[in-house]
Length: 614
Image (tube, rainbow, N blue to C red; front, side, top):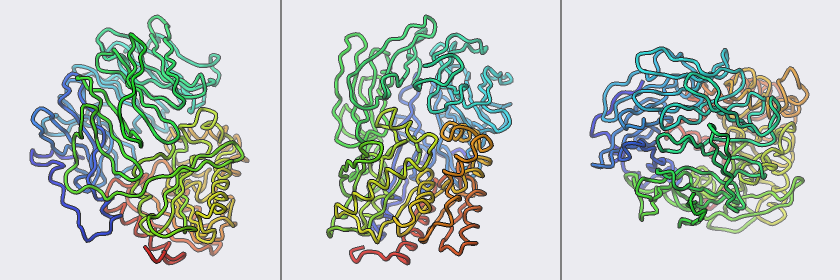
């Protein structure tokens, strides 16, 4: 449980970086902040996430007087929080050592004791939170026993269930007048293409938004950003994939009216309201980079906002019309900037050392052009020893943004290649959907195509190729070492799926639903597909040393299925090392993350050698 922090506890108290430490360690230790979440009716009050204490925790920030204080202080960190519209309460999620299973707590904005925010709700996995006025909240949760449930929580009353279903669902938004709720659900069994339902606080249905025949899997996904931030305005900002990529529209669940907004931008678009609901803030993601726009709802004018080349990691429009955005590029650490000028909420202490710029590679693959991001060492020339750093998700992508984990290898003389394989977001719906039912194998085909290009172009030394990744990237690493045993010299897999069937049996309910969508059913229904996509099926083909790191409390890639794989490696006499740590799906403790990287560097040095300029 968190303890209330005193007024002097602030990111400003972070210790200075040790100049004698290697640059890669200083990158991890350098204080950083997230995009602040601010109270709608008290916009000077914000909460944000920071690693200033050495562990990622929640902080409160009063812009009126500049005061900051640490809200939570827990051994394995805290990463999920929100602030109520009045700015009086900070809600934060209390799990146990990263297991993502717990309850919502709340603390007064100015400090004080923590208390259960939703008494009467048993621990669960979080599935969304919408906070209204006067202590009202809508809390979505998920458990293995009950599936998905949504509850209305009022002070002094027992939580009331307004939605329940076995399939994955969560709360997306609560109207400004606290009368309507939008639930995002996959009752049709397809978590990649959710539908929307508007209900009243008693659970009665107001309207449905579903891109398909009733009860059938939809042709495209729908996502809700939120209701218009104006009292009595029932309009909902929605994203859809009806034209093959994410685009916005406005939906009125009371009338059924849909206002399509065709922006003419080539990439995926994310949108949010300006505080007066007169305009939309548009985040355009295209070819691993992003831009910001303001779309005026009255005139239809689309105005690009000036941002540097790179990636916007989040943005919010402020009441004065300015936009605050978290930005970085491959060579520059993240900064919280404002279109009003300059930076805001500057982290204390020294900035992280920079890295090298990112280059683009477009490679012909079996399913079309594959986009890869390449980072080369500043010194020397190719062919370089090369790390293929594979992103997680799988519905995510690598972009031109600062990544301390990538910079580690650059500092040690390696090139780094990151592949936005089929299944990645940002390249259209067809690209994201392509991996289904041949899960893992599709992605490896794209990685293999980029590997061939990297070797033939002179970038990569074919004798010193490392396959590496975390989460889904760790899964693809273990799968790749078995399916493509001759292609790699070494493997580094962090928090991976290793035994797909055992992972399904033990993982959190929302991940089970995702696996049913990806693979096409349960292990009992389609056992051959799980076998074809499971790393443990190919473990006897692994020919190179492999390093595996795993969190003992991980609900996403649980430890038992990793132990199954490790046991088979041992039986086969395959060279491997395993590092287990007391956390969940990764660690929020900076020194623990550094410890993991040190072990990976040591493993590579012993088995592959490090370049002389390391």
